[in-house]
Amino acid sequence: MNHDTSHALFERARALLPGGVNSPVRAFKSVGGEPFFVARADGAYLHDVDGNRYVDYVGSWGPMIVGHNHPKVRNAVQDAIGNGLSYGAPCPAEVTMAETIARLVPSCEMVRMVNSGTEATLSAIRLARGATGRAKIVKFEGCYHGHGDSFLVKAGSGALTFGVPTSPGVPKALADLTLTLPYNDFDAATALFDEAGADIAGLIIEPVVGNANCLPPREGYLQHLRALCTRHGALLIFDEVMTGFRVALGGAQARYGVAPDISTFGKIIGGGMPVGAYGGRRELMQQIAPAGPIYQAGTLSGNPVAMAAGLAMLELISAPGFHDRLEATTHALCDGLEAAARDAGVPFTTTRVGAMFGIFFTDAPTVDTYAQAVVCDTAAFNRFFHAMLDRGVFLAPSAFEAGFVSAAHDDAVVAATLAAARDAFGVVAA
Ligand code: PLP
Image (cartoon, rainbow, N blue to C red; front, side, top):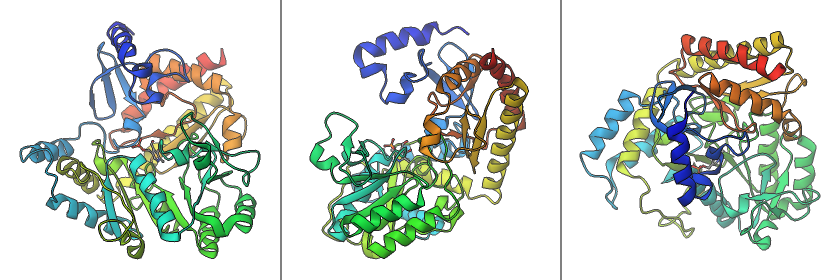
């Protein structure tokens, strides 16, 4: 493949954008090499500026669940922009969006639109703190909730010790308020709440972790966290920025039958436009300004073009059988990858939840903890990533990101992916 134009653009980008990108993972730092620059996207494919085509399993990191450039979403945006781009005053689509979210996700009795997943999670923990009058937040190793200060924290020597900032610029005093737990560990959560429950405002979790590869919850784990939060008067926050409308129409909370107090969303509800949202019980959401005293605002929040894209997207994915078809695609893909790895003699396994999947270079039969994910063979993943890219398949450029399928990933696309994978596993084995 020729990448001359991408290479020249990356050189120019590096002169002006930190690392040459506007979001770190795009820079290919963890897999090595240079990113390609996208000229256009259609269905299951990205087309780069050098004329190469890639089957895309990143899907703009989640929003593109109906495939790229879907005509219904594009037409909705085109119709909306004819009426102006932003009003700074309420518009009808914001009401329809809130009604749609509340219908699809019943735990969200009220909703506030924001502009990104990060804004949604920041606002959710402010609400949790404001509503409970408590300061501490619990999060999980391997979960990502955007780049808010309170989330860029890892565990000290034990969950109960003070959190340690993972980025310069995060004040130690703030990191002290974030407690970190191992995901899928029942006893660690119980012990933490027994010790510190009275100080905990909220526990935030990706109900299916998509930022440490893809880690499904163990049976009963989300119910266990629900019970702990209820018992100790802390709020349960599901960060469904990735899982929302993807692992089921009603998100992970519908799939696993656990109702959080607050939910955060992003990605799919914008259909590719910059959007996020948070919602929850009425009595909590009524405390948000201007209904209540907890402040949160946004100049572009509820933007009419973004609402139009998101509503078109939510209508498309509400079609009966939509998520079942995606799940079948995920299974066909993951079963095929496992078979190809076996044939090549490469230790490998997958995880799948709805339209999300994880690939792990390990001889463990399955992976569902962060500790297991981090000991997988990342060098093998990086070789596989590049071998697939050379064969026209774009996986997330990090061993610690989930993959996504879309409705545009039909049988032919999966078959082409598996043909590439058979070669690529051979490269890994060599
Ligand atoms: N929460 C989760 C689970 C995410 O995966 C992400 C981003 O990938 C975020 C929050 C932050 O969203 P954004 O990048 O839109 O700020």
